[in-house]
Image (cartoon, rainbow, N blue to C red; front, side, top):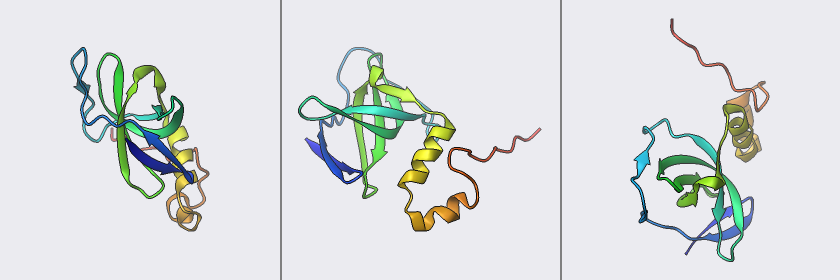
Length: 123
């Protein structure tokens, strides 16, 4: 069993190094992994929501990866029903919340969190 700290709380979760089950495994393009909110199953039957990136999937589960309070990477196969795609605004708000206050002015300057800058589209 593995553990991680999130917002000062320590959680124990079941970590599978690889998936063994029905169906083929698909993957998203490296660098274009979807931003998601995943309810990670914990020891004892509860779940905890984490902001994560989804990298692989099969018909019933999605492999998600996230960082804990100490920026350590974690990953787990989570039931597909427990994973919800986030938009850029939702992701930006969480990044702002987790960024140390002293560093927020560097990334966000005078921009409000939740209003990501528009990306330039070349014609």
